[in-house]
Structure formats: C-alpha cells, structure tokens
Image 1 (cartoon, rainbow, N blue to C red):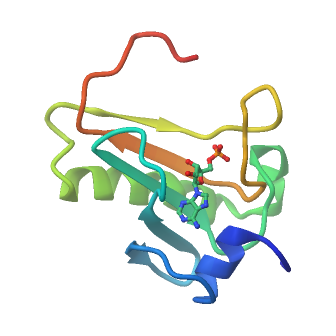
Image 2: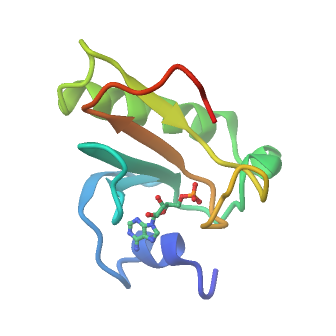
Amino acid sequence: MTDCVFCSIAEGKIPAKKLYEDEDVIAFYDVAPQAPIHVLVTPKAHVVSLNQADSLSDHVLAKLLRVAAQLASELGLKERGYRVVSNCGVDACQSVPHLHIHLVGGRAMGAELA
Ligand code: AMP
C-alpha cells in the first residue's frame, strides 16, 4: 500500500533493523523502543489492525505469535518473560495503521495493561 511505513519496510524501500523475514511476516526493532528489547512483528500484507483479522489466513495470524515467541526466546526473554501487545484503533493509541505485534521485554513492567 502507498504511504504505509510498514509496507515500505516489508518492500525494502525504507531501512529497518530486521530480525526475521519470510514470505508472510517480517520482524524488526522498534525505532523508538519503550524497553531494552522492543520488536515489532507484522504481516507483509497490508492489514490495518486486528479489526481486519478476517483478511488474513489463520496460518499468518498464528505465525505472528509464533515468530514473536521464537524471537523472545532468541533474544533471551524466555526466562524472565515479556509482553506481547497489539494496539487497535484510536482508544488504544494505534499510531501506525498496519497490523503489528509489539514484543517488549528486558525490564520489569507494571501489572496494569493500560
Ligand atoms: P502503535 O502505536 O501500536 O501503532 O505502534 C507503532 C510503533 O511503530 C511505534 O512503537 C513506533 O515507534 C514504531 N515505528 C514507527 N515507524 C517506525 C519505523 N520506521 N521503524 C521501526 N518502528 C517504527
């Protein structure tokens, strides 16, 4: 999609510190990390948010979580834990309208979700 920053990253048009890529999914470090480790996992297909989950196959939706868990393990987060979040829409402060999962870890977080 034109003018979508994550589509541009997936197409290699703008740089990102990539950690994982296959035919469906790409993962890269967040440019403004909110924790020592802050990674985004996103489908390559342009889908605005989880509101459009039906536009993706179950295979790709499952892969987003599987890749997040795999990266958490590779980045040493498995033992202490981590948080996985997907902001959807205005009330959740979603700022990039391309579905993505935040993988955040490397520090203790509060019990509250918001
Ligand atoms: P959200 O507010 O949930 O939509 O999250 C969007 C995230 O994308 C934010 O944490 C931003 O820091 C991050 N972000 C925006 N542009 C880029 C970029 N070019 N490369 C990596 N992360 C980005």
